[in-house]
Structure formats: C-alpha cells, structure tokens
Amino acid sequence: MTRSALLRTFILLAAALAALALAQRTAPAAANWRIDPARTEIAFAIEAVGFPRTEGRFRRFEGRISVDFDHPERSSVAFRVQSGSVDVGSLSFSDYVRSAAFLDAERHPSIDFVSSSVKRIGDSTVRVSGELTLLGVTKPLTVDVAVKPAVSKGGHRLDFHAETRIDRLEFGMNSGFPLVSRDVRLIISSEAAEP
Amino acid sequence: MTALSRPARWSAAVIALHWLSAALILGLIAHGLMMVHGRLSAATTFDLYQQHKSLGFVALALTAARLMGRLCFAAPKALSSALWERRLAALVQASLYALTLAAIFFGWLAVSASPLPIPTRFFGLFVVPNLAGPDQALFAGAAFAHEAAAYAIAVLVALHVAGALKHHIVDRDDALTRMLPRW
Image 1 (cartoon, chains in turn green, red):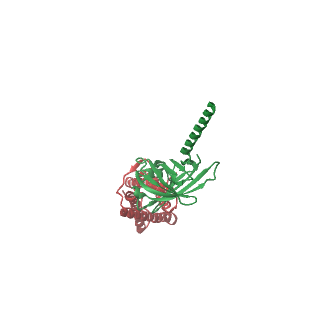
Image 2: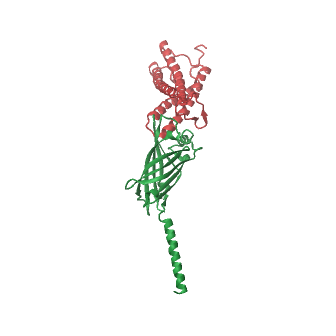
Image 3: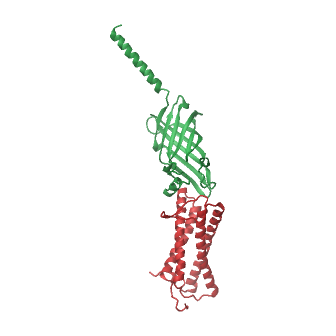
C-alpha cells in the first residue's frame, strides 16, 4: 500500500467514525417542534352562581414541544404563560381577573407547566403528566392530549388538543368560593411545525 | 309662607333635577334588569355591574340635590284637589324619595358585603369605600332589599305618572305643566 492510499483510508475511516458519532448523538433525541403562536390557544372557563360562565384566554405564552415518534416516552412539553396577558373580553374585567383576587399577576407573573412523563395511550392520544405552577403553588397535573397531523400550510405540522380541569382552591385561589366555582376548565390547543 | 305668596311653577333647578332623576332612575331599573336577566356575556355583565354602581352614586348625588332643592326653593301653591288626593300624592312622592335612598343604600351595602369583593371605581376615577366587609348573609339580604326597593320604585313611578296624567287630562290643572321645562 502506497503512502497516499494509506492516508486516504485513514481519512475515510476518520470521516466514517465522525459521522457515526454525530449520528449517535442526534438520532435518538426528540425533535423540537416550533409552536405556531397564531394557532395556539390557552383558554379557560369557570362557572359562577348568578353570573354567566367566564371564558378567557392568555395572549402571551411560550412553549416547547419535543416529539420522539419512536420513543414517545422521550417526548416532552413545557409551557410558560404570562398571567398578566389574561383576556376575559373586557379591559376592566381582565384587570379584575389579573388582580390579587385571582391571578395576582404582579406577584406571580407566570403560570408554568413542565411535563415529567409522556405515555402513548392510543393511536393518537398521549397522556402527559407533569407539574403545574400557579400562584407559586406547584401541583401534579395529568392531561390526555390528542395529537393529529395538521392540515394547514405545507410541511409537517402537528395539532395538539387537551382539556382538563383543575381545582383552583388547591393553588390557594379562593376568591368568591363558593359563588365562583372551584373547578376551572382548561382548554389548550396548539399547532407546531417540524423543526 | 302662605299659599298666595307661593310661585306658580317649580323652580328651574327643581325641574331639571326632577327630570334628570326620573331618566336616571328608570334607566337604572332597566339597566339592572338587563345585567341580571339579560343572558349577556360575562365581560358585558361585569362591565354593566361596574357601570350600575357608578350610576347608582350619581343617583345618590341627584337625590341629595333634589332634597336640598325642596328645602331651598318654595313649592308652588297647592292644587285644588281633594284632601285625600293631596295626601296620597304627598305619600307617593315621599315614598319615592325614601325608596330611592333605600335602593341606593342596599345596593351599596350588597356591593360592600359581596363574598367576591370588586372595588367600586366611580367611572374609573376613584374607589368608593365599602360600608361593610364580605358577609354572605348580609349580601343576600341587602341584594334582596335592593331589588325589592327597585320594583317598589317602578310601581310608585307608575302611580306618580298616573296622578300627573289625571291632573292634566281629567282635572285640566297645571300639576304636570308646572313641572315641565319652559323652552
């Protein structure tokens, strides 16, 4: 073997090893999907005696959805919602909901959810368990999320939809109870694009 | 003051306050019915409640001004109706003052004692103090009294209007016209 042939073999071997190392590092990791804020809604509804059902949503949030199709349990999700961005349909009503009586947005500017486990429980459903922090109180929360390919726009997109109930008293949000129900319905839908 | 020295008409200030109050009180009754029974959205209902509270305090100021007006300005001469008619008219009018004040007081008390305290911001300008702290029983009682007073006002306004129309159409006297503004 000539000297140049030896060098060529060495370079090829090095390149192959490098490619293998790179492949091992990236292949098993879950991919981060980009959340489309325009197609994401974090909404809630709460009942009260002698008052119409209050429905609202949060206008500002950020989130991370990481999906591993081969190993769903390696998927994860995290959301941070700005409590001050609550919108219940009128300025003065929103101001009141963001006051210390309910969201106390000044002292607790964010509402956070971080998943700790994701389990596939159906063809297009995953069970996401994690922790919800509201008013500085952290409680476990498990949500079933329907996942389906989204139809809008080009490229691969996923549509997520989840509904659950939380007990606001568990987080120390007691105002108006029992006139204002303790159950708060959460409705989260999001669309994310392939990285 | 003798009957002869009394003016022929109500003073302009009393007339202005009378019609402003009439419009506001009837408006508030309709407003209240709408915010409670209107099946509107939560946001609209919330805004109506806040508006209702502010307008209620305007009604309080107008009622106080009307009582002052009655003290400061002479009433026109008594009409030549039967004594029982004059007594009934005076009773209805006095009851209207009393019920208006009662409706405002119980409304203020209900707002104050509400288990869900919502600060009363007078048209967003300043916070009106509460008369009591949150108390479910007091709230329920005051809210009921507020509503009952409002319905009673509606009935008395109907009697008051019927009396004025009776004077105008049947008796053909100036009971109504002397309370009308002169343009």
